[in-house]
Image: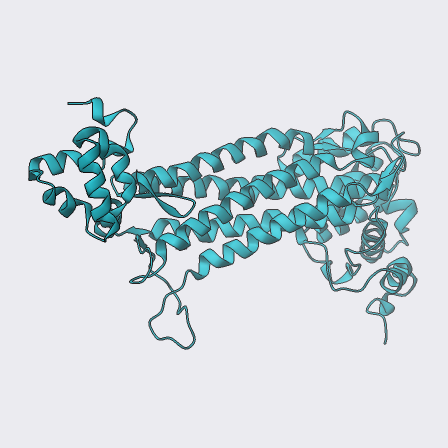
Amino acid sequence: MASPLESWGTYLKYSEKAIEVFLSTGTRFPRRIIWAMGLIKYAAAKANVELGLLEPRIGDAIMKASMMLAEGKLDHMIVVDVFQTGSGTGLNMNVNESIALKASEISGVKIHPNDHVNMGQSSNDVVPTAIRVAAVSETMERLIPSLRGFIGSLNRLASRTGDVIKPGRTHLRDALPVTMGQEFSAYSDAFEHSLGLIEGVLPYVRELPIGGTAVGTGINAHPRFGEMVVNELRKLTGIEFHIAGSRFRAMRLLSDMVALSSVLRTIAIDMIRLCQDIRLMFSGPFTAIGEIDIPQEVAGSSIMPGKTNPVTIEAAMLAAAQVIGLDSANSYANLFGEFELSMAVPLIGYNLVSQISLISEAMNKMAVYVIDRVVPLRDRARELAEKSPALITVISPIIGYDKATQIAKKVAEGIPIRQALREVGLSEEEIERILDLRRLTRPGIPAKEK
């Protein structure tokens, strides 16, 4: 079978060979990473021209071609698989050759992928820089806005369900009452903490190793090259990137990326917990809990007319599971490599950008199609709260042990607690005071209050 790069001749000879020797799984680098590679090649060419190391005509052509790559106009030429050499050399050379070919067409001069496009660079500092630029950009443009929006939706839901009394449940067994708002506020608080963790780890990921070249010493790059590239990346992205405090660290370890991945795992875990709770509250509507309704946009069943299933919730759970799995891969892959270089660069870069995309989309859809649409079924929730045998815990000190024991027996027989209280001789006024479920959702000792 003919190579997809054959028509470009010797310009893409490394890329053509890479297709043969690397894995061919069809797993391509995310657009965000290719965009980052284009920006880095643009910034590198500009720095080399300003340093007097690269002829302006060649540098200008490389910059134009690099920006075309960043804009997605050369994506058809980026053919290497994610599952390749651990340094990401396959990606770097595919990018170098693609830019060289396009820059040669632009300038009418033969531009070399190594001598010109890759001047002052190595795959070992370029690709670790690119995956960080991609991850930080994706985090700031997608993840953080999605997370803030999701927290806002949860806060609004907690506020509008703050007066909905329902039974608490521990071990999936009936417990003392809570408000629905208290339950949802737990999740908004958890996601707020995760937002803080993301903002805490981002400065670490913004440290870039560009200019370290092959082993971190900076040999074969101008001493000012790395700082000039990073300054240009700041202008191009609007993000405060910095030269890594230790290029040696940023090239041999991807621990900063794994730290960000671990926060995504935490978000995914909390997302699954939230989804499970909402699914249970939505279960029924007649034969299970049924404390909330969620209007659905699509049919839930292909065979049962009118059945609505929590489809968006389940999609979010699958995305969250994938995020957790990719985090496990990142943690393990960060062990790969010896001495000066990580051998997990393309994999962790691909995984992290994918994780950010997945969890951001999950939060967006959950906010719009689930959280913002939850309808509390107040009467049903209160009915279940009044049926909870756990209420005996707080009733006993008020009405006495003997009467409480009688009530417990009646409740065990299926008699509603309100009726059981009547049957032991309590007035409606006393019953209303005892069954002030809202009071039971606040701190204090009801038996000691008058």
